Each structure stands twice: as structure tokens, then as C-alpha cells.
Image (tube, rainbow, N blue to C red):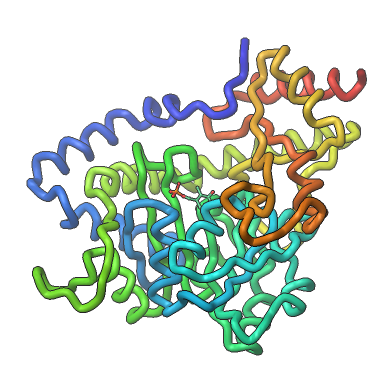
Length: 367
Ligand SMILES: *Cc1c(COP(=O)(O)O)cnc(C)c1O
């Protein structure tokens, strides 16, 4: 038996009857842009994360870039994000012409470290953009305080955080705007590209919707130079079906995560650390080992597929060479990139598969 990193086909087959019916209903409705499927998913998703408004967009990168644009962030502005973020977080900042300013994550939580933010603030700083990496909520309250004190916006990259909770409330409206991706492999995944923003600010939601619709409220009347970034109704219908199962599927991820945490405690791996205030949605289960490459090779030999999130930190990417950060500029991000390994986890990972993972990891750790 081999263990795939994530079985997306299983997620479809588990809900096939409902998904097929939702797709057929949408195709028969005649609404192929916008319409009732989009509106109904937006309402349901907003409610599920305790936010007043949800605006569907084409993908997670657009959610981030439209949120930044709607907040008036552009050329000459700086946005603070974590040095180990996924590249999309930086790309969104670049798309509006602003400059990403990198701050090291906390080594144990992998999330933007509030204690290091203030040293990076300049007169050009306009926003903080933490990512809830791996589905572990970032420490939002200190960031909200810093944002308040310095007149900054707090924008959350929640692309990995569907269903994650911070201090009893779901991630979804702590910051000024929260950005979501429904890329197929996310905890709430479409059957293609899709994304959304959530916010309690009605005016901001309206600005984002307008920007994503050619800058237009009324057909053929263009107030600003917008883009075309809308949530596809077929994807909205699929997401509506899957949203009903998100809590249950996240619970299954939690069971696997707790099993790994217990079973691997005796190994020499650094295991994920969950702060008392955090209720992660376990998008990824990321361990650390100084011998990561050997561990990954041995697991592959045992038929276990693992991935690395992410092997090259943004400041070491050729795409960001012009930021001028050399090797060693962000030692924590670089060390994490060298040592992290994501073990298989997902709602359809069987207990026997998780046991195989544990056995193989223990064997590799013993050699
Ligand atoms: C997936 C992801 C994105 C981008 O989402 P897309 O829908 O692929 O554009 C952005 N940020 C993070 C942290 C992600 O994991």
C-alpha cells in the first residue's frame, strides 16, 4: 500500500451525487457569470467564518491583490509579511506596485512574529499581511494592536486557514480584510481556481467587487480601471456542497494530526507547536528535521509521498532578486526551508495509512 500526499479524487467521489447535482443545476440555470449560486455561496461562506460580507473572486492571488488595491495601497507603499510566506503573498504586494518588507517568522509556529514587526515599520508602511501558514492561525491580537497604534491595515492571507479558529472565533474578520483561496488542494477546494475575500466593512467589500468586475457597478459604466476576477458559478455551486462538510473534514484532519503528534513524540523530529489560543485546521502537518532530504527519500522508498512547503524562501527566489536580500538575510526562513517536510494529511487519509507513515518515519529516524 502506498500513501499519496493528498487524494483529491476521494473528496469528489465522497460527494459525487451532490456535486454532480449542483453542477447540473447551475448549467441548467442559464447563469454562467454571477447569479444565485455565487450569491448563495458568498452568504454561506461569510456566515461560516463570522464575517458580514464575502466577495467571490477568481483565485486566492486576486483576493490578495484586490484587497490591497481596494485599501489604496500602491507604488511607494510598504507591506510587511513573513519571510517564509508562500510566494503568492509577495506577488500580490508586487502586483499593486507596493514593496514587500520581510519579517522573520516565529521559529516554533512558522507564523509572522509580532515581536519583530515594529522594527520593520517605516513611514511608508501601510499594512501588515500575515499568512495563517499551514492552517495554524497567526497571533492576530498583537498585530491588531500594532496596526492600530501605527495606523496600518491588517490583511490576512487565509488561503490555508478554512475553519481555523483564533481565540474561540473563526479566522474570517479579525483583520480589515481576509483573503481566501479555494485552489483544489486547500481545506475548502473547488474543482478549479476560485477565491474570495471576507470583511465586516461593507464599503470595502463593495470596492473589491467593483474592482473585480472591470471597475463597474452598472454595466458599461466604469468608475475605476478594474480587472476581470469573478467567482465562477459552477465553482460556487461545488463549494456550497463542500462547505457543508468542511467542519467534519477538518475534524478528520485533527484526528490524524493528534495521532501523528502522539506517535512521533519520541522521534528526533521537531513537531508542530500549537499555542493555547490556536485551533488550527491542519491544512498541512509540517515536521522539521536537519536530515530532511534523507528522511524524504526514505519515506518515498516506503511508498509515502511527502512535499516541502516551501523549499526556497521568497527572498532567495530569482523573481525577488531585486529586493537585494542575500543568503543569510533571513536565517530562520532559510533554516525552515532546509528542514521542513509535510507529511500526508487530508480528510480521506485512512487510519492504516497514517500508521504506515508513522512506522516509516520511526524507521527512518532510527537509522
Ligand atoms: C494557495 C495560496 C495562495 C494563492 O491561491 P491561488 O488560489 O492559487 O491563487 C496564496 N497564499 C497562500 C498562503 C496559499 O497557500
